[in-house]
Length: 321
Ligand code: UT7
Image 1 (cartoon, protein in one colour):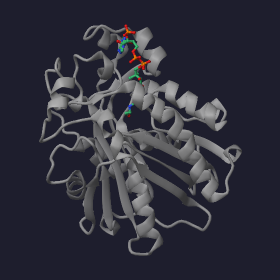
Image 2 (image 1 turned 120 degrees about the horizontal axis):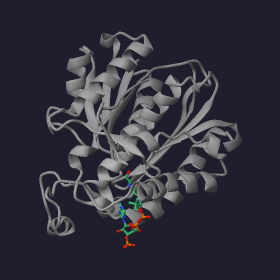
Image 3 (image 1 turned 135 degrees about the vertical axis):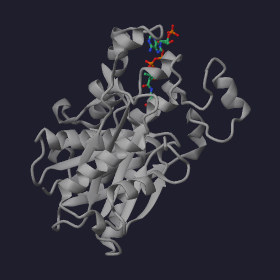
Image 4 (image 1 turned 60 degrees about the horizontal axis):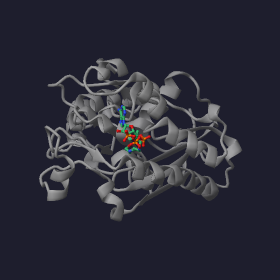
């Protein structure tokens, strides 16, 4: 595992000076105190490169042994070359094939699901999965509905075969394109409805969302997806060490945890210090748990996420280190 967040901290009181908001509102309604933000001219991929380097070092695998690099990002510095190709160059993973995937905040779960298939068939031995996000670059800083929520960061994992009964045990990914209009970041095309929603925005190529619709969807889909991967593996909620959810809003996390029937101390969160880092939320939180020495061999963990698309998914992992 590896992770990287920018040095610059943007606190709730900093935001109070930028929009009509308060530390109290943000903390109470979202659980966020501060978030990390890239400097204006800092590239997003540098976070992914650093997280990837750490993951490669931590795994003991040589860069040239990596067969494939999958990067999940909704905020690439370039449409081409892909962020995965940039990471290949910067890490010296010279033999790896490389591609990016877009599954918004569910990207890490999509990434490890793809990696699992390639490893299990024996087609590839080592796969680097990176989630690298610079949400500050697609934020409209005049809109208090969204600018308080997001942060920047990257998380990475080297995926390879481990002993039987450990590793990624079950995964589930899904999508519903009919709800795609609930979160959008336009790129090369701006339809009328996207312009209208961003009427007061300085930059139209920024994130807009129907917060409450996403909220209602998330509180139902998170327990559903978690239960699915547990059921598929014959594991009970009580057997879990932690659930590591997508870190979008502490009220979504608390409500989903309650529906799932898991104790609050088994829910691993980093939202207070990092906010919502889209697809990097889950691997950054996992790397945090690992670095804080909260994990031991045999622990069962569930990752569960949802995001634009709409997409959602979950994975059950048995920690093998
Ligand atoms: O990973 C991406 C997936 N996206 C999500 O998970 C988003 C899910 N949705 C949410 O987390 C919540 O819906 C939000 C945090 C976005 C909004 O919280 P809410 O409790 O749903 O607030 P709301 O939109 O119902 O707004 C309540 C009030 C409104 O004022 P009025 O109309 O009642 O006077 C808003 O204008 O809060 C106001 N408000 C704010 N006030 C102070 C909205 N944002 C702010 C703010 N500071 N930053």
